Amino acid sequence: MSENQFSDQNYRLFSQFLEKSSGIVLGDNKQYLVKSRLSSHVKSQGTQTLDELIEKIVIRQDRQAQLVAIEAMTTNETLWFRDTYPFSLLESTILPQFQHHSSALKIWSAACSSGQEAYSIAMTIANYKKKNPGSLRAGAQILGTDISEEMLNKCRLAEYEPLALSRGLPEAFKHEFFDPIEDAKFRVKTHLKATATFRQFNLLDSYSSLGQFDIIFCRNVLIYFSPEVKKQILQKIAACLQDGGILFVGASESISDLNQHFTMVRCNPGLYYLKKSK
Ligand SMILES: C[S@@+](CC[C@H](N)C(=O)[O-])C[C@H]1O[C@@H](n2cnc3c(N)ncnc32)[C@H](O)[C@@H]1O
Image (tube, rainbow, N blue to C red; front, side, top):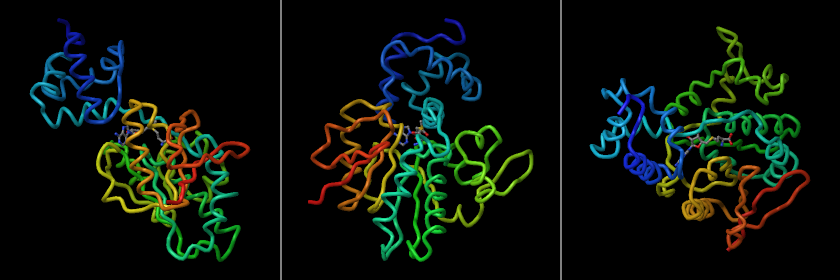
């Protein structure tokens, strides 16, 4: 077998490992994806071929190789103010409902990738507070979580390259909320950065350590999971949202099978889900 080949049996075992550990479903015929994402790790994991690396992951169950594989198989595509409407609805409709909130607004960006979603929320809130002096006096606490430590390190560093900055970030916000640093990069300003914290969290795990939230963004991650896992995750999300709390999912993700927990609120444009009171 050549360096970048692997057996059908090892593909099946790897798919099972990935789904069990991260929820990500590969499905049939995604050998090319495994090859393109894992090949570059063969040597660094002390193996000679992709087949051997997969065996190290699924048969020898080497924890380090497993973590590297999970990191490699996640899709971290993201941008600032993705889909626009969640952030415009946050500003126009949702934040006004919370403006006299006596405690800090608790917001969770679940599967936050490299931080653009969490910092877009932070910028929206800062902008809202500026336009509405005296509102949200207790501020907001944004929690960003992801399965990928590599992504979380980027979130904590909060430094972005010109290409990443050019994807959805309004020029005026770049100047207001970022400081220029070396190599044409920009860093999120300290006061904005202070409103967000980041921690590693696998959406398959128990949510009991997370506490309760007023607003949850869980976007563009459910698409990678099976219907059963998606349902379990949405149930756990409902349990850690306050009554009357708000959930945003990705623009192409539907949670229509969960209407026992949420009421869909259609807006123009976009929609969000309102947790039903018990
Ligand atoms: C496509 S990005 C979405 C980022 C952002 N929410 C957005 O909409 O732009 C999906 C993220 O989900 C994360 N992810 C995948 N499986 C996960 C899991 N089981 N638990 C937590 N995060 C996961 C990936 O690491 C990746 O950063």
